[in-house]
Length: 428
RNA sequence: GGAGAAGUACCCAAGUGGCUGAAGGGGCUCCCCUGCUAAGGGAGUAGAUCGUGUAAGCGGUGCGAGGGUUCAAAUCCCUCCUUCUCCGCCA
Image (cartoon, rainbow, N blue to C red):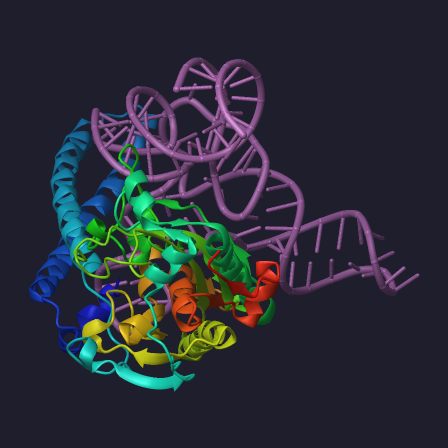
């Protein structure tokens, strides 16, 4: 969410910046009307309330002195009625304004390239050599089915499309990747491990920005107002909702493994085969709470932590800076890490590292006090997160990039300790 | 899921309609006393948020959350949330 005062004072500038996102801004035009109306009503109703408070004291005094106060009570009855009407009007305007503000995306950072869609994303760097095969490489779903380590058909029977069973060494590989990444981020990168709830309430989903605009992308529990988390970002960021942290405990860094659930509404027909687009997938997520002045350094750090995973796994990737048209609702700046997938003959997203600045912090009310002893007002923290990495897509990348002519898969060396020293997955 | 109890400021806690916009402790900050320490004395201490103002300020909100009753609500009524105890169920 954007700051009301900031929007009020920089309206035209903000409108121009939001226009670069290529979204419909017609709602934004209502801002000035709602904001003005709200302030006008507050002024009116507060004068009346001040009067009521004052006269209530007089009534109390008269009552104690056993004097007659009927005139004052009669007057206050009228004031009370007026207050009730104005309060109701104010409440409605505030709801309108709130809904409007929750539907306005973040302002892109000045370093975010201006562009219309994914074709305007800017490649920042590339790492690793794309593997050259002296045979026809297979897509991971064929490899995995032949190896008996993934079963899409039975998952479709048991649940539906876009679900999968991992089996045998496939399941072990998934688990090995989770443990490898968790250990790396804790021990080498200084993150604290967290294992969050997979269901969150509506307030949390609103805090991180999934709601109200993207409700159809989430799975919802019918009986409760709970949602299946689309990413651990939601519970971990909301961990500090309505909290005031102290300056010396920042930055705070958490790494959380969780399953993630996405309805993939609007993706019908895209990536229908394999692990790339599932309704449920595993992910190791990095979340950082930082001071505003550090946030762009911190984003580079976080992105580097995610890249490190790909480097250690020996998977070729590139880093893109997402343009204004492809930025995501809540981000001010975003890097996507894309891993090489041989069967696609292209790079596919495997991590998204976003700086939200104070946008989520304002929605979720996460603040900090630089010096707890001073009387300074608390400030909003900056939040950021990134996948470190999406596990299913990592499995797909390993299967495809490490495949051998005979259909076997060589396990990257860093993973072998987590695989009970299995070096290769072979057809039995 | 059933039955009870409770939620007041950093913590404990008093408080059944108006001098409580929140007593009293503890803690914390500052000061005094004391050779040091311990003990003692004194003063201060609602954080937050909204409106208004260049600002000191002024005003609104605020006793788990949201409604309601009333001229007036921490206090009365309703709904919800959370915690604790017991029972049931369960990994």
